[in-house]
Image (tube, rainbow over all chains, first blue to last red; front, side):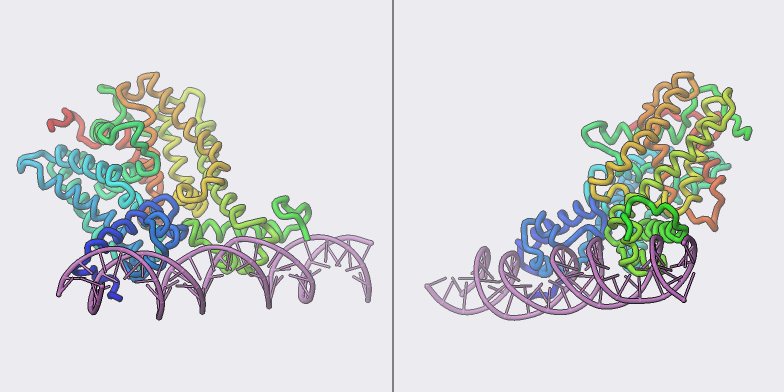
Length: 214
Length: 214
DNA sequence: ATTTCCATCGAACGTTAGTTAGAAAACTAT
DNA sequence: ATAGTTTTCTAACTAACGTTCGATGGAAAT
């Protein structure tokens, strides 16, 4: 017997099984939510017995936690790396464009982890929402800084609330996990139109929106 | 004993309890998801015993189903009524504006039912996703027609995919249930800025977005 | 005051959940 | 081959789940 939590030091097979368990858990968590994801279900998908899971993880919550954290991390690091890879003289709009593209690509391509993380975060016990809370806040800050800097430089209208802008924009992107079908449309199409709408608005050139008369 | 499913014909108290059970279920469903919502939990919030629920409902799924349907219906009817109340000569942008406002208001004010419906729909057993499927499709069609008509009349740029536009816009609005805090900002503020961004884009007047150079 | 119906309670049933632990198997190294 | 280690299985436990049903209290009707 070995202490779960601490990964095995020499074994190979262990890493593999651990990965399969996580994959199965992410898949199940994405589709059925936290409460309907059972260890026996995970085990079946992973091709092992339920009891065997406890060789790799100490509890169900430890698995859920690992899936959630991996999901958030994937998105965060994808966006951060994409931004870091831009040339130093890249403009604000170019940077926002890159961030939107990276966020969306991570979400829709990186599979079950990100979707599970996004869809399930609000319904897991508060106790371990907090385990990935710091990472989530970092990510929020990244976007907040990105938008605030653009606004300070005049690339974004000064009458918009950047916090609200961020919430609406990320909501629009996050919601794609609910309807995106990889066979219907490439991810890049979605990113392109989202950016286009965000920057130019939906009205034709020359038309002017006068606001509500209600 | 009485047949559940068919509502009682004369009783008064029954209606009240039924409502309290639904309220408790909606509240619990919103916060904890489908699998973690238990009948004993619902009963406790409603102030009765778990077994008593079966006087009003035939099964847990019947409750969940009622909550979900009520949530979708509230949004659908709010938007439809708001549109019907507009003067016949109202322009396309005015109509879209009204729909956005009504959708958001129903979502954020109408409480636990709409939130539960939105957050939980993807994770309930497929068997009774289909019970509210028709209503959902009607609602999607309503928006699709609204946007397509605006585009046909030149109020929306012709190079945008209306289906994608709808998905991104509604995603942005739906996601508000994840972060909205009634103590922080009135709903109308959110609706106003969302519409403003949607129509005019985020760039200052006069600036022009040239697209990606990547 | 008695009857009748409505609404709830309280205790139980069978099932399934997460979890545990010792035996068994599979793999490594000698 | 053999011994030791790593990994999985099997079988069970307890708690909690949805659900059932006869008993019970309260309101309304006679």
